[in-house]
Length: 422
Image (cartoon, rainbow, N blue to C red; front, side):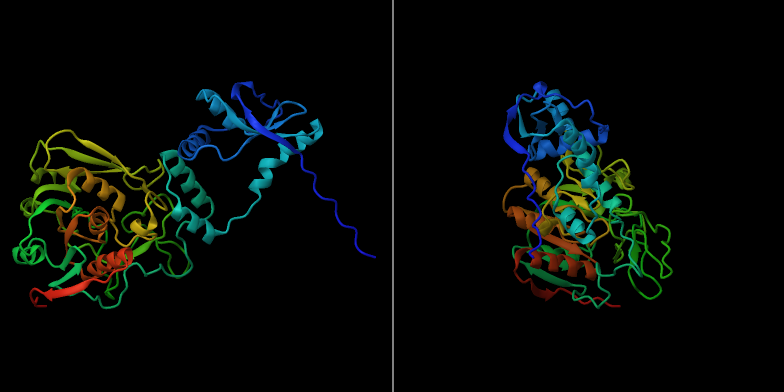
């Protein structure tokens, strides 16, 4: 005989509508308590997205079954109406749903790869949502702890393509592998052009990457796992929030092992925005405006919550908010990259905002410490022209490849301006 088919699950949803939140009845048997962090995170998501889930109300008892926090917050915000889904449950069934709805959702396991890919695409709109997503990442074990050695892919150990003196033409932009303190190199980069703005993030003299190992390999930045499985100490601080971002290997930042002198920068353009100015403020002109970049990090992050940039402009100081906290970062990944490729990499969105506020379309920008090429990508987006200098060949490769990947075009090696003796 044929097996008896299981009965279909009954549909207990009997309607939808809208109601004033202050007319809904809180369930006296609700056992969930909502801490402030949850309230703030929910408010952040609601502000950014709005309603995507209805309040569940039992028509038999009149009580809310699911959505107490959303109702309470709607009342506090004086929202006129909230979306409601009505169900038809006995008191006993209502109790069962109240007792099991949240715990059933909490039983779900995590597919780490899927979560990591999802978080890479999320652009949180508030500090509270950033903190929530960092907690999610930590809870899922996305802490960069891998079996074996740290992934070396960020900076390949292969011989770099770029050589000292090379000039690469990337569309409207130019990138030179050279020394920004060398007048001949600067002249070769600029080719007679005059920059209206020097936007740069120079080495601060804080030795963020401690040079090369005995085997001439790049040093890891962040926690690394030794072959025995035990994490080593922090070489120069973790990247991102606690245990959120994978440690990476980076080529050394040239000049970061000694105090930085900004004097050669000050004649490169009509105006200047220089990150890290707080480290060499005594060598900069005084009385000008500063820029504060608020990274939107959680309180548990182990790196600075903001950075200061000195400017040559007069007037008021300015605040720019752009989330840049571990895996949780604002901006599309086509621009900002999923993985960091430079230990002091800055977000394209931040530099794009600066270029928008301080330059006009078609303006020539110089970045004498181009690094991973953030300034060039921001200029590409906004129709500015970036002339970038980078002394480390491996980062020249990174910047040129990044522009090629972003635009789908090929850079052209224009010429070698001079030979450099070993």
